[in-house]
Amino acid sequence: MELDEYRRIAAASERHWWYRATRALLQQTIVPLLAPVTPDTVYLDAAGGTGATGQWLAERAMTVLDDYEPFALGVARSVSDGYRPVRADLNHLPHRNASFDAVLCVTALYHRLNPDPQIVVDEFARVVKPGGLVCLMEPGVKRIWRSHDDVTHAARRFSLEDLRRLVRIAGLSLERSTGAYSFLVPPAAALSVLSRKAATSDASSSDVGRSGGRLSSVAGAVASVERKVLQHASLPFGLSVLAIGRKDVP
Image 1 (cartoon, one colour):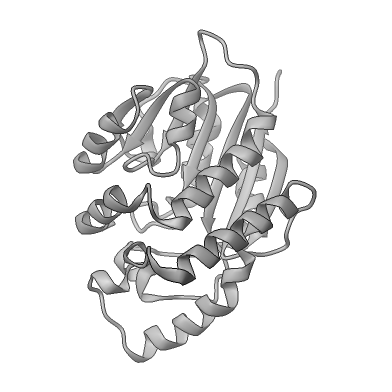
Image 2: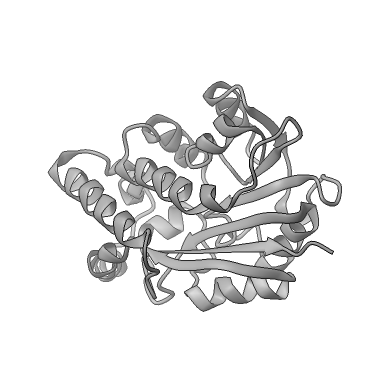
């Protein structure tokens, strides 16, 4: 991901509707599946960037934040006292086996720096404790490709079944899988067509720059309604897809 995109994320993470909604979605989905916090509880926010989506985890218990970009690590230090930033490559995590009670990874497997997502998820399965969770959230709808994907150095998007397969091959038991932001699929498909007609790679191509106005308020409100649905049911697709696996206890 380009350094300017990290800067945009750092500036927008508190006001942009997507970051607020995603933090709420992750908390709602993951917390009921987590073991109670103890003095020994440690989480991993893998490729956590500036902490824009995993800050709530660091506020719950000590959380190691892995990322490769020094700027992001510097921002994360100021986001929460619970963060312990570490410069790391997800393909070769510098952590011992069974180190973490849960691993959170949001929009990283799609990246060009991770040529084989299965290797990364296998690493997550290695470093999570028996009984612990691995939560993956990635861009969905494989046929949609927009200029934002170019800015963020995307290599792929995922179907829900793609994420389920990654979890299962890593030896984890699938706890939950669902689509999210399903209401964004039609407008994203339209933007995909427009992006192909007028491809650019400047800041205006980044979704992070589109944070204000009435449309953002509407999107945040619709996302809130969708979260209420997700409390009781799973969606078969979405502009994002989410899968949670649990490491079996021997």
